[in-house]
Length: 440
Ligand code: MN
Image: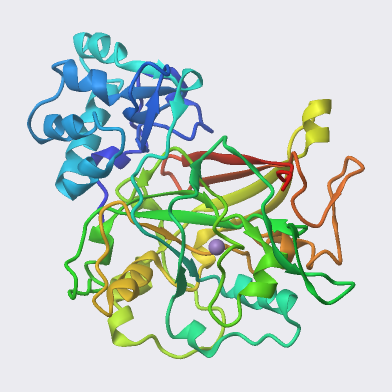
């Protein structure tokens, strides 16, 4: 696990004024990585978020302001994805972070500031792309609150699977349909059981849902046949972003026994543009919560560090902006707020269990944490839980109700960390809009 260092100093300030605003997601203590361009003529390349701006790592590489390992790291950041930079490993991630911290620091020399300022572009002027070439995507199921509440809504006879408290459950998902924040996708068609006739039909989903998740990017590969132990698991993690694992509940209910979700989950997933590194998250670690009496964890998934600091204190919020809200200029309506610290299994346990049979993870693989639902059911991380499968539609306060996602709805995920005297850092925002189903 990362230890605290000068880049976490809550007193550090940047000469980028917006970075010092108390509610800014991107103060100098954060420095997340993303991929962007400022015009369609420019190739996508990497940058670092600072305040209301992006530190362009392409310009920084050419500026003469870097040397040593930080310069080599910035060279890898000229690519259209972060994979080559990620594959350089934790020393390179740290070298570039610390170099950016020094260049953006309010105490930097005036000539440094003048040169570094030429490497900034405004965030409002950039277009983002999915920042990583994602090889494999594995989606977990690690919130006990989501497992119990969501399971009961899909099937009244549902019982928490016996294995849930023994291992972090997951299915192998689909990487090709993962999109970047801001994208739009049509309501998917699928095979569902018609409630009135009791026979399957092929039609657009009527139960489109979001899932509030975090996306964990693997930054180090392990060889096939060589599991990653729990004490080294976090060395394989590059960073974390916000993930919306869109789900079609009517398709899911019909198809998922006995092999798990398929069409219900493979039509779209949405990532936020910035990946927050584990080093930036070091001040926000917390002890694992275990809310139900359950078995002790098997030794390969247990360590004192994981028990004491394995969880992440990441606050999360989901909002909806309906087409009517957009037309009237009203603010999005908050649907839930929760915290990733409530999750039953940790990131390290997910990663260790993934490799426990010898499965090789590769640089750029994505692990979804599973829906993050609060202990309070009114703060669940999906609409099927919030609306009790449509039995209690949510009153949006503007004359509209929602049981599931409607055409034109924009679903917005936000996340941030704040604790004690440490500087608040944020994940930015993850949003996507659903458009009407295609005519088939
Ligand atoms: Mn999911």
